[in-house]
Structure formats: structure tokens, C-alpha cells
Figure 1 (cartoon, rainbow, N blue to C red):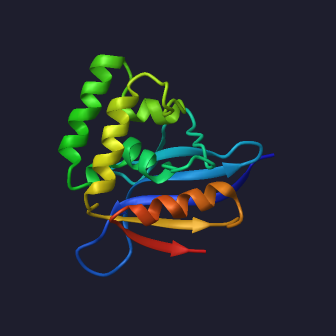
Figure 2 (cartoon, helix red, strand yellow):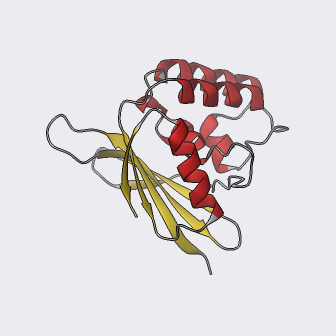
Length: 164
């Protein structure tokens, strides 16, 4: 049976007060393989499930779980959101798959179609500030995937709200 080990919520910082105005979230489940289920937040506040599941490689030399989820679910929060949208459009036109489909089909590896555009988008996202915040709630901090989340968050220029 899978167990929920972390939740990531992506959103905008409100003009007044604290907290977060969510635009997307991801639930991370473990056992036997760590995977994220993604949701977008509609204007009415409902959650809309993104098809598929994202299974990052938490043992990679440089893990990208948060970066890939931002590209797939909330790239508009980046200061270079327009540039990322252009890369996404090019990837879809040239390889038949956009960043959301790549992530939630877990096709983000070196040999996957459109990897070059995806890698470029990762680099752009990590090199520029994100206007917003990522709220994290970690329920099983000893998991390799939660270590990968923390390592990836350390490379991003984003406000992180933690609950552990």
C-alpha cells in the first residue's frame, strides 16, 4: 500500500498577509516507487487531477523533482514564464510532448524525446527567481525522495514555506 510522504503546494504570495494563493499541488506517495500525483487549482478552488504520475529518480546525481513539477504545473510563477512557455511549445511541436506530459509520463530521462528542450527549461527555471512560493509538508523525512525535494528546493530562488 502506498503512503503519502510529502505534499508540495505551488502558489502566489498574497498582496497582504501571509500564506499562499495555491495554483497547483502535488502529493508524493512512496512504496514501492516514489511518485507524485499532480493537481491544478481551478478558479472556483476545485482541484483538477493531472493524468499520469511523475516518478523522479531520487538517487540521481542532481535530482529535479520540484523543478519538473514547477515546469509541469506552475511555470507561470517563474519570472521567465514566457520563455518557458516558448520552450514548451517548441517541445510539443518538435517531439509531440509538452513538459506536463513529459513529467507525468515520467519521461524526463536523458534518452527521452525532447530531453534537450526539457533540460534547457530546467536550467532557465533554476537560474531565475520565482514570483511565488512553494509550501512543503513532509510526513516521512527519511525517504530518499524527500531528501531530493530538499536538495532541489535549495537550488531554486523561491520562498519556501515548510511544515515538517
